[in-house]
Image (cartoon, rainbow, N blue to C red; front, side):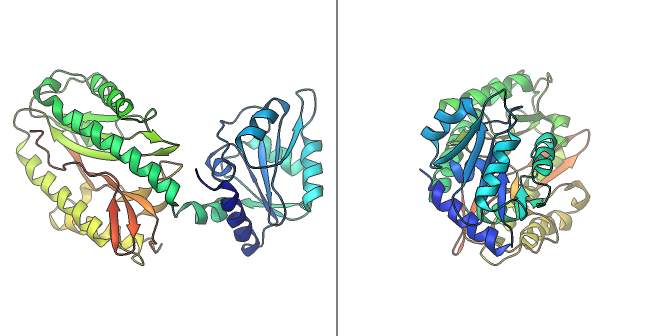
Length: 369
């Protein structure tokens, strides 16, 4: 179980270092990260107020009071009924914590109706975004997070083994059917749902990096891009393999696949503490460019993964972000030939003291046998 209180104290130290009086967090991952309360936003205001000094407090609809008391470590839970204006509760918490005229940081995706309520309620406060503070904490995963990420990766690995096991039986399946098969196998291996809409891009659809799946039937010789993940204890996996279930692929495919595999290997080998994210991107991009496919690598090499499936650090060209132990991100070079096929190979890795550890690690070859 994560130590949510310890995370909150770390957040408060970071708020003080940033010169902020506090943070006001919305029901998205930042709120869960500090409190352990996992909820989706609704039309009712629910926020966690975290002062730089002192105890945090929830402002929440009364119908959540029992749930918050049972599921979080936060003791101060201020509620309002559906017939009351939450502004008075916000104003009281701010006054108690000395936040009426300080600099307050809010989640960047907080709904406009709630940011406007906060501004109207606390007109003397100044405002900023909480990402800089929470992002610096969330970017390094603790032991509980890494355990969940490893188990999510294991479920994805097992599902990919099942996908390979289809062999020639995949011929004639639609992409929809393959995506449903993948989702079923992820659940069978301990996952909860999917991290994102499964990508099952066959033949020319594989040349669209974010194609998900449609009614196209998989044909003999089709390269099929399979990109998917599942969730374990709130943390996702993300893996891509490009396979041919039966028949002979296009003549250029073998070469392209080997280039992408070499680029993936080069990027993994480049990962270690102190190396910049841009240097890892460059290691992959150099291999693909030297093979003559530079213009066909149209996205960054990777992205961080944690409570969000896309978060910092971003493994992108020219980024000077230094890698540190505990950072988790994808490495996913790709080459796309519109109208023909695409190739992408992706794994999640965690930075270790002397390199990195893969969190997904199935066979990366295109043959399924």
